[in-house]
Image 1 (cartoon, rainbow, N blue to C red):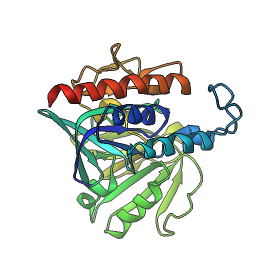
Image 2: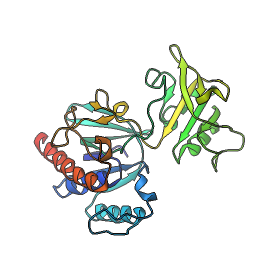
Image 3: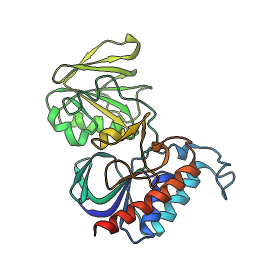
Length: 287
């Protein structure tokens, strides 16, 4: 998967797919990284999108995806964990793989949960967002997997298989598919404690005991944009964009719910059009 694309789009919802088709129609090679985080697929009925009355969210997403594929857009399952500007291109980390793009469009949706106390300070010092990237660092050590994504049990199982002493934490009941020998706590992590490195976690409400650990893997469906891109401009929790959907980082554009309300499909698709076209113009300008 170590390839160079003209445009890589982070997010496979309406905004991301709209950006994808509009970049592709301007001659760009386009890859969409879809973490499966779109909540639209769970909508039972949608009546406020022009031309599709009464459609389910899943059917709408299937139509959007088929449209993008017909135009030559590549769509891959994956979660970006870091975006690094490198001259006239960007390096995007996806698990253990690396991708390259001339322009990036962020269509990651609105974050439903804020950062945990201690998360940002200890990021890279015991806090990680990717088990396949950093799991081997904890072989023979303790690690807590905080599962807030569908693939979290698989990542916890992987870490257990390579010799990490895993404790699984999630807000709901024990998930199906989690290895039976992995201890599981049902609760929410309220704080990550430590000095130079992670030492323990605390649960919300203090109902459950403080757990000592060497590392914490926060496995969400999506990663907060400002932790994806160093120095990305954020206002009131949303990505700050200019009129042509550009961010403060040259070559990175943003669209959809991650840029702020109204959190509507029509707005996401419209912003995707602008962002996709702007990304294509940017690619042309650096050729």
